[in-house]
Image (cartoon, rainbow, N blue to C red; front, side, top):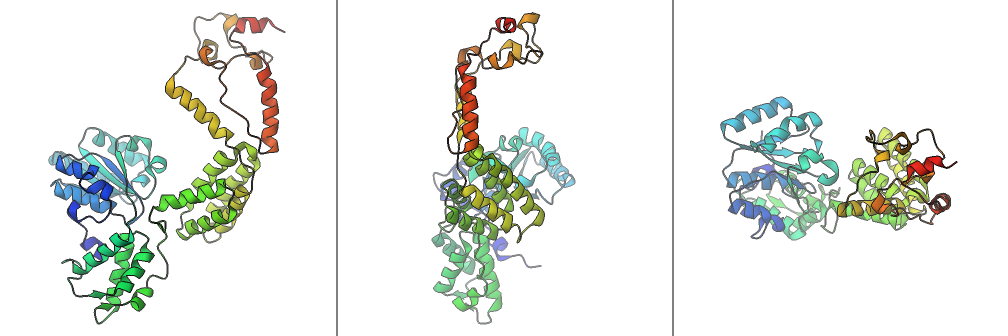
Length: 420
């Protein structure tokens, strides 16, 4: 079986990598790893066809380190065991893992000790943002590097490299400039997509001359894995979320359509749920609930029908009043905790010791509960939540909060118990 063009011409050296200059050129961290003959466990993330696996293989080959490939979706524990056994014989091994974000808990538990003791150097490749999609146990043991979509110039360079490469077309085909431009515009920074179009175009011509008319047959569907500007698929997701936050219903629907074209229901659902809670929140809790229901419905029916509940949810969120009071409250608390920490009052602890009955939490005195101080003594007057004013529901919460904050809370539980 003949291997695909993209596989045959995969680089064996960082000097042959096209793109990712921030990582592989003179001052790039991966270049420094090669120069110092040190390789660390890493996760490469970014859109498809940006060279994640190619860079991993090139690094292993350049350092003359044994490596094995593993797919987190299709690979099993038996394969991992074989890799571990080989690693023990070779005093370590590089494991290049595709779809690392799909590694299930069982395989993670099997793999983690060997990453920990250095027997396995993991280089994981993923199109998913590792800060959301990869388990913290794996993430904490790896350095994370982002790969960017290639520019049009870089993609065109990759096409001509394939035409001249000994394992490619070896100068036997001519590619017209306008045909190359059409491939480059369609691929949106995805080299693999561009090379696949080039390969099928070459297969379809008998005179070894690839023209625009030939290429047009195979680029009718533009690759939608990356953003047109070349800044990445995550910019597309960011544009989607920010359009909803900015109440631009037309912009949000446009970006939703782009994500639907990419068939990426996971990212759509995650962004809608985050946006619902972060940007709308208490201004309109009902729309948050409706968004959850819409996402669940979309999952149940699948594409193409999933576009209907998703578009309804996007319009609903765009035109809803907004409040960021929820995220501001928790972020304010997290900022304080980063700076200082305090002991929980003894009467709030699960199993307090050395407390008399008069000093213990009053489970039988609901009248005392709203008068009791729950924050540690030194920060008892801190206020993390500031109500928004964008919707009637949060206005009710604000009124209730005002009444509650008029009451002076106390740590003197003994005195509070004496009140009636």
